[in-house]
Length: 322
Image 1 (cartoon, helix red, strand yellow):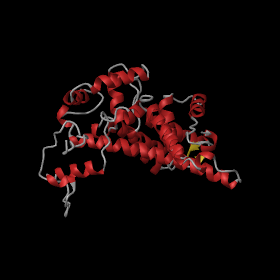
Image 2: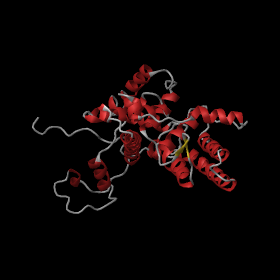
Image 3: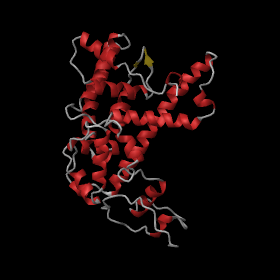
Image 4: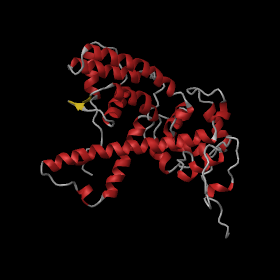
C-alpha cells in the first residue's frame, strides 16, 4: 500500500515540540507522553495548524478524561502526570505561536493540571482497563515487556495454561491498580467491561484513521489526482491496512505487538463480548426487564445471580446431536 496516498499513519510533531521546549528552557517531558498526546489529538477533532493540534477546553477534557486512559499504560519509569505535562507544553507552544492570549493560556493550563491529576487516578481503576493495558502490567511485572515478541508470546502461552482462578489472582496482585476487594473485585461485569472497552477503543482509532485517509483522498480529488488503487477495487485490503495501523498504535502505547496478539492468537485470554453476551449478562443480573423475549437464548434464566464468575464464558454450547 502507498502510505503517501492513503496517509493512514498520524504524523505528530513530537521531535519539533520537544526541541522547542528545550530551546525555551522548559522542564523536560517524556517523549512517549508527548507523542501519545499529539497523536490522540490528531486522531480526534482538533484542528491542525502547522502540524500542531489547536487545543480547546472541550478537546482537553475529551483527551485527558475520556480517551487517553483507554490507550496508554505509562512505562514504569514515567509518572502518569506526564500526560498533563505534555498538554501544558502544547498550550505554551500555542501561546508562543500567538494562537492563545495570556488569559486563555492560564485557563487551559489550570484545566490541564487538575485533569492530568484526575487521569492519574483513572489509570489505576481496574474497571477502566482495556486488555492491552492489563496485559502490559502483567508483562512488565514479569520482566517480559521489553524482551521482544517471542518472549511476549511465550509468556502468554504460559499464562494461558494457568487455571482461570489463578489468572484472576494474578490480576488482583497488580500493585499499579487500586483494588481493595482483591480477586473478588474481578467480577464477570468488570471483565465484560474490559472487553467492551477494548473493542470500542480499537474501533474508534480505526474510524479516525479512515477519516484521516478520506480527508487526504478528498484533497487529491480536488487536485484532479486519481483514486489510489487500494480504494479503486480492493477495499478489504484498505480495511486490513487500517486495522494494522490501529494495532500498531495501540502497541506503541502499551507493548509493541501485544494488541495484535490478543486480537488474533490469544482471543481466549482477552475476550471481547458480542451483543448477545452483554444482553445475557444484563438480563441475568436483573439490570433491565426485556419483555417478549420468546426463544432468545438469554431468556432461560433471568434470576438474580451473584456477580462472582471469574471469567466470561465464551465457549460454544455442545452439539446436542453428538
